[in-house]
Amino acid sequence: MIRIVIAGLQKDRIKKSVIEAGGERVEALITTDMDAAKRVKTGQADYYIGACNSGGGAALSIAIGLLGYSKCATVAKSGGKPDPLKIEALVNSGTIAFGIAEESIETAVTFIVESLLKKHQ
Image 1 (cartoon, rainbow, N blue to C red):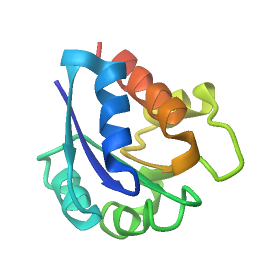
Image 2: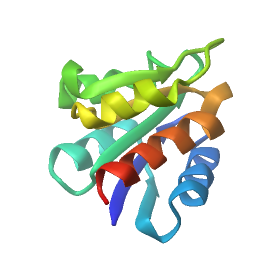
Image 3: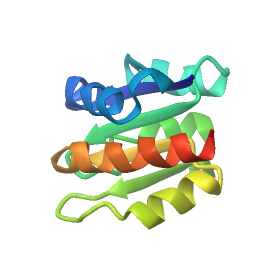
């Protein structure tokens, strides 16, 4: 079971997308960005997904502070499209916190969860 914590804007949409992409292989918990980052840092959760208007600012600021810049990445910026190959490479290189622009939630979350499931087969 992959445990994903969700923070930021449009949390319900993110959770719905996580469950649709991962089914019974994922657990999704909506919380605050501070709590989410702490849960990942202490091992109570495996991954963090946060959304904001830009995909990089508020979506990841607390996660970067607690988990470190090298463990966090914006995968869908405002006005851009998420790249499944880039997301898979980030997952495989150890990224554990993902920031997305709210306009790309469904697509980006699907790519993230599919990459995580592939990694944890």
